[in-house]
Length: 277
Ligand code: FAD
Image 1 (cartoon, rainbow, N blue to C red):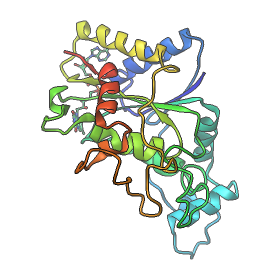
Image 2: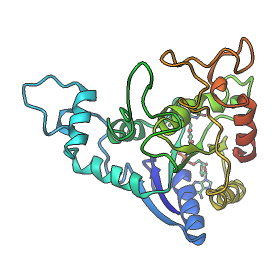
Image 3: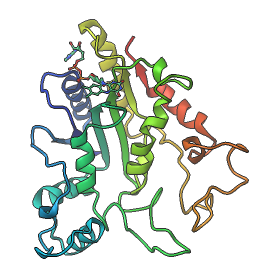
């Protein structure tokens, strides 16, 4: 497979850097081809701004959605953004790797998504009407490709458990896994999570590295999280509400959007999420 690893950590000697190298080596040992977008090393511009849209007249009001559509259709996105889109088209699998910062991805990576996931490429794809709300959530430009997260946390696995104070890890990662990766069509694999890493010593590193190697060895075969397809019949259109007969009665929240319920997602993730203690 061809794999793009988008990596966001500012320190080349960090734990994340060491885990990135473990992942790359294992993937290459398996015969895969790997390209890396190292966002800090490349001084990636994280803010969307006017300069992203060279076709925009100097006195025109910037409407980002419209400007993104125009630039994508005219092949007039900036070279840095176009290069990332080309890598995404090239890759059979996308890996996003980052430390959890404030319950989310570092701003530089969010900015990569904001700028690279252009209108017409990652969103605004397909018919948009009262009968069809776009090709997304199971359809879209990146359908047939796989994606997964590699993340590290300071918090313990229990803190991210079903009753943990941080909220379930699957809920925290839902906006990324479902909202960013499933949206344009990726099959999203359960994440690799290394918990409680701030006190990790050399002895704790190897078990974590081995668990990561195993996930890299099974990148092509790990079953994806069974998110429900928007246009697969589970949702009413155009309200996009889950049909009332689906899901547990009275249930709300992110788990509803996993076929068979959150246990499916948690079950899949539990096999792959790793505590380092
Ligand atoms: P590093 O600091 O580089 O290393 C962590 C430990 O691993 C060190 O003790 C290091 O010695 C050791 N180590 C062992 N082997 C190696 C090796 N081979 N190479 C390098 N290091 C090794 N955590 C949460 O859970 N939730 C949050 O919301 C959250 N918000 C945060 C917000 C900010 C702004 C910051 C800075 C941190 C936050 N954290 C949070 C903690 C954060 O997730 C962790 O600090 C991060 O995941 C650690 O990854 P790192 O690569 O930076 O580790």
